[in-house]
Image (cartoon, rainbow, N blue to C red; front, side, top):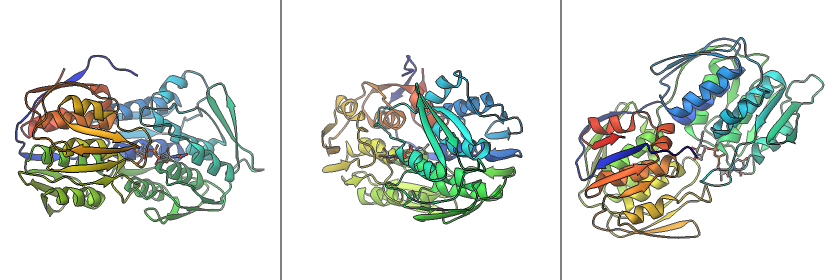
Length: 425
Ligand code: UD1
């Protein structure tokens, strides 16, 4: 990918103390931006994280003719002049951001056609799109593949998507979101069963309902959407990033430091907090504020990743970093993606004792990690290595800062503020 020499340098072994403000959720903001394609009026998004994935998504929408003005954490999105992407110049932009594929639902709903590059495979697994395709077919879409493009067209007599009943064969966040967006402007009622229940899906439904959509049941296993003729603009505040919050809780635990997180939503982190409590961390809560107080010695705990409300796959790598210095042996099973353990070799090079078989990592706790030069392989794996570096003896250099900057706003600045010795190079 785009790796150059950008890196993080960390002097490990420092205690952290203080408060971190949690940013808006990457996975929500990106989808809400895609959803703005559905709107005829202006969308004002607040609490948008300043991360490179948001920049790329803005470029994609601007290339479709939208007018986007950003000011700190606010995006003003005007959609009057939008047209569906067709030229090849979109290829590289779309291809560099998997979530851009989720534009297909809104494009089909608004224009009746879409031409989008196939999302490439990525390091964490093959990441198929069959659920998106098969369910859109049920709403009246046909697909053709030409070179690396997917060409989709609504073939109902009215050229408008037609509501339908869909039973997903797996819980996919992206496919659920694609169908919610598409069905919002379809003719008639759509019933979605076996949907993903992630909080980001509730955020999407909330914004679409503010725009005039009629969506019921987001957050449960069945969502009903009564299609409407058009959607209007709205003001919307992006939910807090639960994965960023979980990453910093784990950073506190691995450095055995008491810290607080503000502007976060503890209800989104129940399973993560439960596992951290089992390790020996205590928690205090006041409104939108969590304080974590870890014991000096933390115990090993087993985790299996699964769709929400289970343990999030996006925190598997950071949690594994934590387990490297816990007391005892932990088993970490990755059940969402088939190839998401690239951080294991790098953690082992820092002195961890991890072996992997059949997507289950066995982590035997060691006393201390040692600072090393390590290489991040994806967004969350890079965060995990940085967290390991915070607790390691000596200096850790984490290459792959570009990955981290895709999804964490001011990662190093937020940690510096609470006492970490960490800098971007
Ligand atoms: C979203 C998140 C990502 C997170 C993932 C799982 C965004 C922008 N990204 O990704 O951070 O790691 O959820 O929580 O929100 N699958 C299929 N067919 C499909 C679609 C998915 O088999 O058509 C499978 C995938 O291979 C995977 C599982 O379903 O094994 C979950 O993937 P999915 O929920 O779709 O992930 P994303 O929406 O891409």
